[in-house]
Length: 324
Image (tube, rainbow, N blue to C red; front, side, top):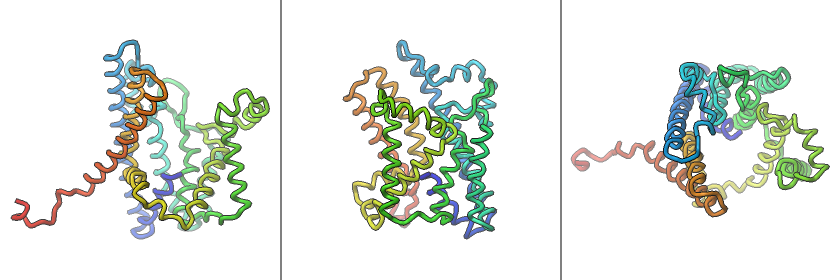
């Protein structure tokens, strides 16, 4: 949802200002960046799994990531990796995002004639994938599909995209809508959070009924309704209070958001190393808190360092003699 909202800001204006083909070229460039990042991230984390398996006693991190087939059937896996027909579960976020980005140009082309029809196209893709159980292959040696079916999850992406670019207008702040959104959030909480529903017969029965509509792989419609309720409540809370998001306390969050791809890539590797660390030092409230807080701090530092590099401070306007 947030990625779609940001994508409309990043790419939507290009389509309007520079035309369809320039906008498409910019999307293709971003797709290439994400694709390259995905490949590099896989090999980096796979290397961590190999090293950790060798240096630790009694832990097989290759098996934990379900990468045994990659190392035993490397030729097939390599072809699958570079064609995105081999998408291990831990590495399935960026491929899903690639598919969503690829859909931007055709939907922008449709939106030139009818923005509602562009949104209807996104909905139609979602419904067709849901009804006909359509997905992309996740590995060449089985029938398993992508854990995050991109043809379903693109609906969430284009919900955020449509809100950002103006295809959809957010509903006004009304007490009845606020109450409805709160009810949806509470319902999602009590039917999803295990300590609440476990052992409560009525709640377990409700979960059995709504289970098919909460499926993660096919982005069940209840998940879509839930995120819409959360987004609506957030918009109500921060309406005319945007200054709350520009304080020094929120600056690190903003900085991480501005460096979303580097922060995401780093967090994928760091979280895996964090799990290995906890395996070695033991899991309790203290170690879990320490490892997670350290990881969050590292992500924030990475965001600031990345921003510094992107600013290219070495491109100084100082005269050559002064610089010397």
